[in-house]
Length: 335
Image (cartoon, rainbow, N blue to C red):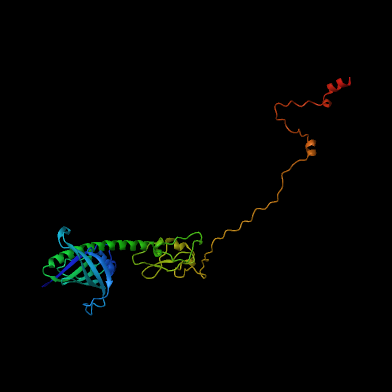
C-alpha cells in the first residue's frame, strides 16, 4: 500500500550569489548528481521501457546510492535506480524510479528578487524571505507506508548537504567571474607610453578623464565621444539643461576663436594645429683638425741656453767648471 508525501523546502541564498549562477548549477546534471552525498555511481543511459511519452525525450541516468538502514552503520546497502532530468527556465525538474515502488518527483527553482528588481508576491505558508533570492525544492513522493518516514528523513538529510555544497560552489563561481572581470582589458585604463609618442588608436577608458574645473547644476549632463581625438584624449563637453556649454572661469580669457564650444573640434579645419610628434634635431659630430703639441728643435734649445737634463741622482758628483771660464786656472797653465 503506497502513501503520498508532499513537502516544500526553502533555503535563502546569501548575498553575492546571482540567479544565473544557481540556475547554471541546476542545469549541470552531473554536478547536481555529484553534490548528492548518497550517490556513489552514475552514468547516462537510454530511456528505460517504462518511460512515458513525455519523459522519453529527457536525459536519463542510472544511479547507485549507498544507504544506511540502521544508525551507526549496522545495516547498509546499495540501491540502483533510474532517473530523468528536465531543465526549466528558472530551475530543474527530476523524476526518480526506485525499487519497492518508490517514486519521487522533484522541482528545483530559484525565486525572490535582487536589489533593483521588482518584488514578487510571496506564497503564503512557505516561510520564503521577502527580500533576496532563495532556492525552493518541491517534493512529491510515493512510497510504501512502512518506509515513508525513513525515505523522507534520508532524503531531507542528503539534500541539506547538497544545498550547502551548491551554495559554496556558487560562491567560488562568483569569485572567479569577479576576478576575471577585473582582469579583462575593458576595465583597464589607458596609460600612454613613450614608444607611441603619447597617443595610440586603442580605446580609452572614460573613468580616467577628470572633469573640467567648472561649476554646474544637477541638470547638467556630460557627453564623451567614443573615440580619441588627434591629441590622444576623449572629447569632454559639459552642457546645461537648455543645451548651452559650461566653460571654466578662464575660458573667457582665451581667443574668441576657441570660445564656441560647438565648433571646437580637433581636426584639420580647426584653428588649432594638429598634433606633431616631437622630433629631436640631429646633432652633427664635432669636427676639428688635429694639431699636435709644439715641440722645439735642438737648435732652438741650444740658442736659448737650455740647461739640459737635471741630475736627480743624489750620488752623482757635481759637474766641474770648464777651464775656459776660469782665468786663474788659465794663467797657471800658461806660466
